[in-house]
Length: 438
Image 1 (cartoon, rainbow, N blue to C red):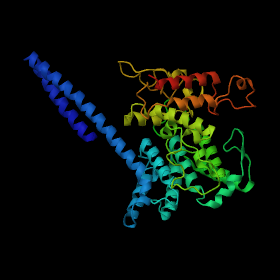
Image 2: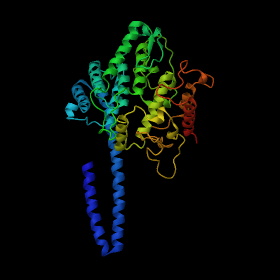
Image 3: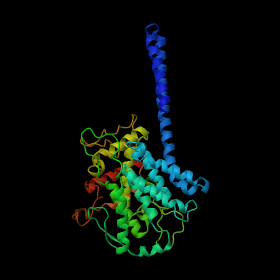
Image 4: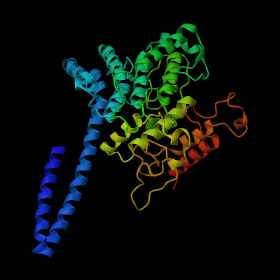
């Protein structure tokens, strides 16, 4: 595609040079030719941009599907599906690429989503091949080690959790034991539960965290300012790890995990009574699961993850999305100030005007290195607007006027990664709720 564009550009440049030379002898005819060439140039750019978006979507779909092929194809094509999956993961191996991985960050995240789709299939699923389970887990752990993106690590943790869950009625005995959880500022927050099961869940998640992002450095060239690349665990990944541990401990993944951020926030969902029986459907987390099924901590996490993804993806143009994803990973800080310190730069109430939407970075704080604000105006969000019921639920999760006066040690007022006042966070979600109104 780029070679064709280069050829078209060279042809256009030669024609423009001829038209500019002929302008001295015939001004009117030359001016018309120049206008025609400018119009042709604009159409070529628009066509190239459209083709790039369509090609990117095609490869994203391939990345989603490739892990599921191991269980979907017959025995004659299973080796080929296994080899194709290995080739995708191999593009994250610095020894294979002789340097930095050559798989775009967007496709890395899409491949991780494909692993989660495959892990959501239970053993009794008609397209769940038992022999591919070990291979998928091995490739997912390998990819977790080579991952460069926080979203990839979060998604792979959830996928590995679904594969780790015992798919039998015997596990229901553990659901009768309720764990007690509290914050302690580090990793997993299990305080008391049945000793053997709780310790096993925590140790399993800690093993996954110890391998996350240990092979490759953050993407892109080193920062000019000399900032040290981020090595600390991303706050969203740390919170997801806590939720994964609780899912393993309780055996109820639908309370702490989700399959797709936009799908789960769009639907209130149905809650099934836990009677200790064997689940009848073929998926760990069925399509009927909505945000009401999720635990409060999971609701808060998926909300801010969706905000972050909308800030990064914006117009959906592949090159710009890739650049923003790389900038987030090498920024030197885990989260932008607009998500953790002050949400005023997001301009949640921004509405589309007659002109083009404001460019990313135009409303950022002076010291912000992410350059993502403002939030895309209403109607231009790539993954779709966050619906009003879910925004109102975010307000419900915040403490009321009386509880806000309690000391912080008594009650956690905001998510761990948020340091702003409760009133400001409440105003932000109120503005987000009003975006979907006429």
